[in-house]
Amino acid sequence: SQQAARMELNTADAKTTISRHIYGQFSEHLGHCIYGGYWVDEKLDVPKKDRIRLDVVEALKKIRIPNLRWPGGCFADEYHWRDGIGERSKRPKMINTNWGGVTEDNSFGTHEFLELCSLLNTEPYIAGNVGSGTVEEMSKWIEYLNSDGESPMTQLRKANGRAQPWKVQFWGVGNESWGCGGNMTPEYYANEFRRYATYARNYKGAPLKKIAAGANSGDYNWTEVCMKNIPKQMLWGLSMHYYTIPTGKWNQKGSATKFDEKEYFNTMKNCMKMEELVTRHSAVMDKYDPEKKVALVVDEWGIWTDVEPGTNPGFLYQQNSLRDALIAGTTLNIFNNHADRVRMANLAQTVNVLQALVLTKDKEMVLTPTYYVFDLFKEHMDAKLLPLQLSSPDYINGSEKIPAVNASASVDAAGRIHITFVNLDAKNAITVNTTIAGHTAGKISGRILTSGKFTDVNSFEHKNKVVPTVFKSFKKNGAALSVTLPRLSLVSLELE
Ligand code: AHR
Image 1 (cartoon, helix red, strand yellow):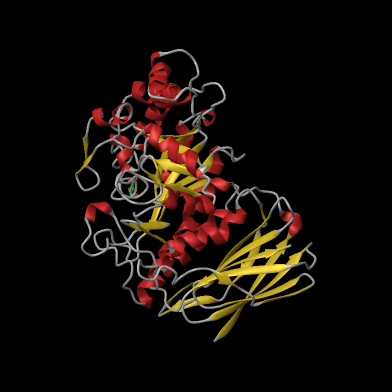
Image 2 (cartoon, rainbow, N blue to C red; image 1 turned 90 degrees about the horizontal axis):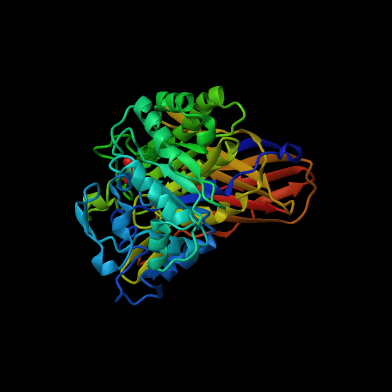
């Protein structure tokens, strides 16, 4: 059946920039994200630079990923950067206690990560070790990375083959310091942040954008204490983590590929909690920072399911379905619409872990439905947000309901408008009747990502089951635009 939604836009409202950093990614030393993902065996017969896999790099370059967060996650607070520099055969090994207890050989370290970022043409976002590290260790890492002066650290960098500083700017001071990053109270963490951040120096041409480890989903007190106790001029951003768990239960999260409509609905309901989280964390931040100088950085988000049967439970490997794409689109629409405060975000975790963009198996590579969402949405990056009023019919399941349609819109430097729509309804197509005040009819083109079932995936056998195709179900008449979104679909429109 068919239902209707109503949406209003006005080109005169385009004021806030949607930071491209909302489209950031996160890659941890976890499972096969780094090792066996980006960084492969010398003998693997794929195009490589050193041991970096170039087919993965090429795929990610196409969606212009703006930044990459590394080395964790929980791993960051056990990582000692000096173990990951110098001749590889001499680097000490360690146990990755967070993720499967496997041996980490430190062959992928600072130089390798920054080479990956340069191949990806993306900005590095490094999370420093607060939990088990020292102020000196973090301070020296930054000197090693960013100073062009004369010091033992810069000499060491040069001896390791890098003359120029890298000028890394995004700097995380710990990760999940309320949990795996040290089990701290917010008061204790805020003090630690002040101490670590003091010695996280700004070198020439490389002013750091320091990001405090933020709240676990709805822990508004964490945000409150950090905003109250950390001087604003020390903070570029404050983070927040939220994962969509299909069942809502950490001990049995639900399968990535086998679920019914009830579980699909529940997952989308949990995903939409992001709207409430960014609204309420922003409101707390507004109390201390009404000018919105400090960014809310959602540097871990995505769906977290049970691992694929037969895989290492510590490796967090999950398939990625059309449901994941609908989560990504809905979440990115939420972030775009909150671009005044949300100025950075990082999907967890790019390759082979959680809501991945890319899955690899030996020589093979698959681009997931989520990858194609970043492709459909990429024109929003650094464009001006067009705030929208949207009234959507509900998607009803039993006694519960959620809005079926969500959307965001922006206007780019060339004056083109991009609108991204998501229809979560598993049964109904929905026509969105839109008025775009201030826009005269020009050429319109569209793309759609959809598939027969919400459980559909791109597998190594059928790599192109869920891929974007041309979309034409729209009509424009003056300022009026009507778009018919099929059930379970993501649509992006470009209006010239
Ligand atoms: O992304 C997986 C883990 O989730 C990260 O290491 C941690 O920060 C979070 O709990």
